[in-house]
Length: 307
Ligand SMILES: [Mn+2]
Image: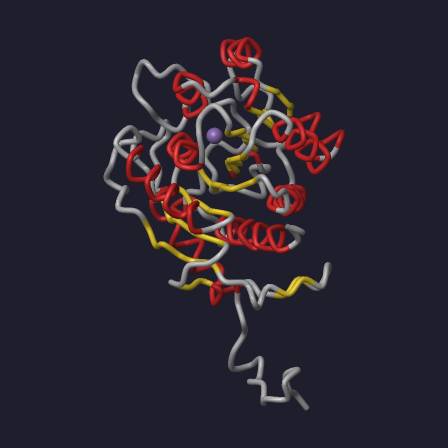
């Protein structure tokens, strides 16, 4: 026997399965989704432009129900703005369309979710979220992304570009930085700028959720809004082979998911991005399912906000 709470006949699970994908809508609401297929100027060329649609497709494989926490997302709706026409644009030229789209989505919603695209997105995303001197930035990333900007903007220098734009270093927390994946010069830049630097080992020893909780509290005391960049290459390469920058010995997918939910529950987090997933490198849909689960965790975390 099967019936819904209202007593209406319920369709067999063999015929229909409510997925996260079915939550996407064209109606405005508290959650917004912006596809940002930025792919030009990547340090290692890839097909990041394929990622937004690959993630949407993988959402069809995720149920709206999390049995572990008895979280039911079936009543959540996400306003999907579709993909921005930026796949052919340089990282520099993508500033205006991404900034404006994020700004528009943020005016209508409490949380804007940007599906990248490579990490060059984070600069325009921060620009669209709030004022540069009062927006805190938390990154989960194996890398500083503090490369010099003299050769132009790419996915290796969005944080450097933001410092040059005027974001105070003390308003930036970088979590998950991996050994032998960053230069001494970048580390020195981060320390000089006053960025909070949290290494991969620290995240594993103290626990990623604890580290991001502490960093969110630090940013919340200094800023009035928070932007979070999830560079998916912070995950261990064996679990995330389709992030070109991922290294062996990285964060586990499980810890990444738990931290994502915790972050999305923070009331000051107004925008999150997911970057550096390259579907052309995917293995058995590992990356697509990981990115899709990230989105599910963001929705679950947002739903746990008390405000
Ligand atoms: Mn990065």
